[in-house]
Length: 562
Ligand SMILES: Nc1ncnc2c1ncn2[C@@H]1O[C@H](COP(=O)(O)OP(=O)(O)OP(=O)(O)O)[C@@H](O)[C@H]1O
Ligand SMILES: [Mg+2]
Picture 1 (spheres, protein in one colour):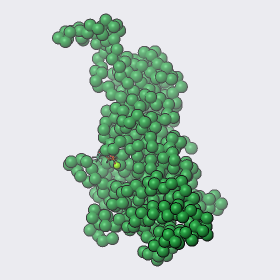
Picture 2 (tube, protein in one colour):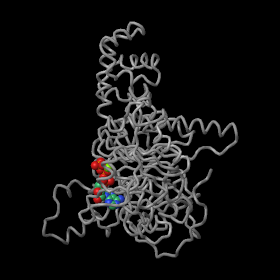
Picture 3 (tube, protein in one colour):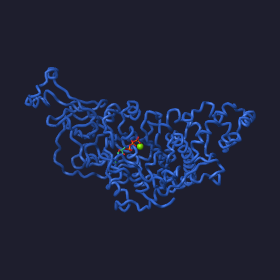
Picture 4 (cartoon, helix red, strand yellow):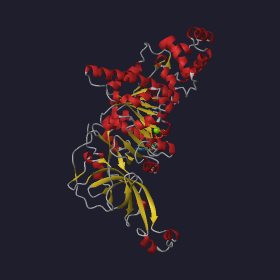
């Protein structure tokens, strides 16, 4: 299916552009080398800038990946002009001493004079431009030719190319949600802001429904900002009103933060399965026999297994009798009991014995979340003070499992009965490496979702500061990656593995600003690009998000009880 727009971008007549330089060397494998024009100041060039190489029959869209100072002779290097000899310096600049710029061409299109290339004309780079082809800065129109325009259906502005504030880099949102995606970057680089921007786009363009597992309470009602002039930004509920529902595991925390309309979530013990035990193996320091032991308990007590195990009635004597009857090891059961008692204690605010709190066996809040998602209502689940990874992973896993089952069932039903398939769902998780580490990715539900749930219309949006902790197969299957500054070599290597020209992009990644800049690559953009991400929740953003375009925040009463 062709989802890039096809209309012709009219070529606005523009004055010839001042050349940045000419191509002097190059190869398909290593990229191109440009000699900088003598009148171009080298300090104006920065890695990641988008440039256009005007070949004879093709234009090439390329990124600057490196800048080098060169000299034609070693003599010059050994005897540089004196500090006060401005004249000689000027004479040598660009001749004896010159600058070469490495370019990585990413796309090419036939050069046409009447119209600018459209996204349909773009093709992978299969050759190099002629010797001495001119290189110019990209214009707004070039950016539109490559990335589409905001007015195209499903195209959403995510930011501007570096040093081109007037141009828009758009994500093709239909393509974005088709696969699982990743937002990476070290702490404080803007991952959460960028994630909120993506989620707002998905909601605004109605391409999927979102479930956000909001570990730090930043997505639902309000998020905090390091910006001194503005400590708080609106969450999705304030932007999209009744299209977004907030649930909370910690009603006290929601109340303290004056979050209106947060529905409390409680989870009965019976929701815990072996899958959760496997996921929490490291966190709870469980040994290898723990999973086997839990299996024996499940065989004996079915859904009541956890409740029976942690019950005070399960004394050492009772354990011994149980083991005699079921072939388990008392020591192993004791150890599992101790650790799971600790788990239920840590989660006691929201994890309840089956009888208590929930009248029926059915965990109502979880069922409510699932039916809202099926009705295309977006759900943010706040964790309040429960920010311990164990708590986060447990709840995320329980919810994801229920969703998995429901979506598989609905997809299969739709195939049999020719009903429409279930709504496309995007699940946002933070600290993704904890769920998708090599040890866990093969065994747990998040691994399954990342690997195969695309067929069932469920994908992940993983947000993480340590991508090297994620299983490489999962990383390589991510459709689009939005990568803010990373400085650890393992992390850089991990996000770029399997990508052509990875080494030159690694250089670009390491030179990003510490905030609000990202390298975007993959399925939702035709070529890798460095953007300054748009500012979240400024006047322009609000105007675009709110349906009546008034820019007024939703008329919600923050004092209302819930
Ligand atoms: N797109 C943006 N619009 C406005 N401000 C931004 C944007 N991106 C980053 N910032 C600024 O940078 C700060 C850090 O961003 P953010 O909280 O998203 O970082 P993070 O990568 O999620 O950090 P952590 O790993 O600690 O969660 C924000 O508080 C905000 O002030
Ligand atoms: Mg964050």
